Amino acid sequence: MSPPTADTAQPSTPESVREPVRTIEGLVVSDKMQKTIVVDIERVECHPKYKKYIRRHTRLKAHDEEGKAKEGDRVRIAQTRPISKTKNWRLVEVISRSGA
Image (cartoon, rainbow, N blue to C red):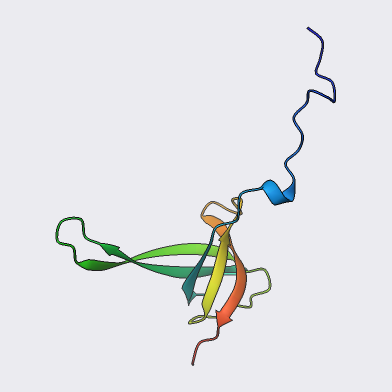
């Protein structure tokens, strides 16, 4: 069997066909680390048995290269490749600044 030629090789995926990047909004709860912020994501889920709504929280670490986000800011983060052991998100934009 001969090696694959250019005609039979898989074409590279163009940017327009790629899966959209997952983005979420949250509140910055810590900016004490260098180039890293901790973002609290709040979601509301319905209890399967009692049908009451429950607030659930998830804390994610996001990469903030310029240190733009401060504690209390509302931010949008996007999922990305692993940057460190616990950092898989990056800061996209600061939506609103904290009141303090």
